[in-house]
Length: 358
Ligand SMILES: Cc1cc2nc3c(=O)[nH]c(=O)nc-3n(C[C@H](O)[C@H](O)[C@H](O)COP(=O)(O)OP(=O)(O)OC[C@H]3O[C@@H](n4cnc5c(N)ncnc54)[C@H](O)[C@@H]3O)c2cc1C
Image (spheres, rainbow, N blue to C red):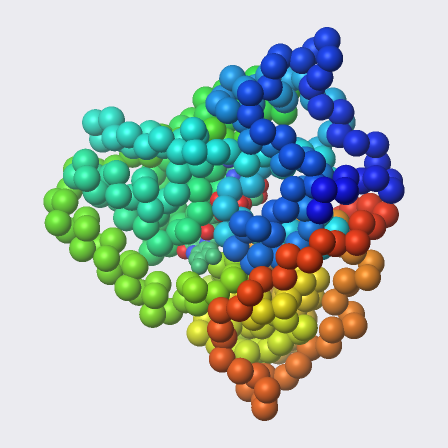
């Protein structure tokens, strides 16, 4: 895992060192595992995983980094497939120093590494309603802003006041929500802009009622989603006028398997790593589901899960056949140990269907 990902095809990422170096105070690890923490527990390493100490540290790091080096942020990976060949360039993971949450009047200011539940809880404690939906979204504030995360008829777009981002060149900007180009599960935030803080607006409400609503959301999620599985949440966006899960179910995909990946029996718009899946299994299964839904109902599902990194030619999923639904051997979804085997390092072959395809 410590061998540089790009040894075969790319020069190592030029880090801000030497004359331009402004002593970096965070952590920077080469070939660091992402599968250790992202929800699916699959996929290759980051060429460099960078954890800045604070905003100024992130700014200085980016300002000194070769502009050609690709960067992306990662939260807790609850909406990500990291391909088996890993992620070239720099992956930025904001540490705890970016997770402070404070209520200020009718707003809640949250660091981008804070979890949605922490924001919802802070709002509840301050007697602010309208942010309860964040209780059910198991990601960070940064991921929620990027994805315009939402549930129960609300989303980030309706309650975000502003977000502070660090741009690729190290400059920092605070952008009003109206400038973020929000649409359903989408923002127009540039792919290399890193959210470091967000301010959400609530509405004064009754603390007990807010707490009850959060409890209701938690119970409903528990009943309807495979929360204890290795998953990436809703795989496909709901097409206008349809529920993705219903289209998938109607196309006969409930329980469908490919390698170690499976369409959840509990919620058909969730794919799960049932034990020994590769990212290629998961992505290949998703494509199989898309094809079956298209053939059955004529609807072309759009991936909601973000896919990043490079495909390994050897793990395209082709050799791992899709197995039928509900047949013998299709067992119940269960927790299992993740595969974290080191990938063989490929010639990099960035797929056109990476992050930019969203
Ligand atoms: C069980 C389960 C239930 C879910 N339910 C919902 C739901 O109800 N509604 C919903 O909308 N989603 C849901 N999701 C999906 C997911 O939780 C959300 O999309 C969440 O907002 C992703 O946050 P994250 O921190 O995990 O982001 P990641 O998955 O790590 O990243 C997602 C995207 O955000 C980008 N990103 C992450 N951090 C930053 C940052 N600081 N700055 C800029 N970009 C960043 C990444 O580059 C990537 O493009 C669910 C997922 C699971 C596993």
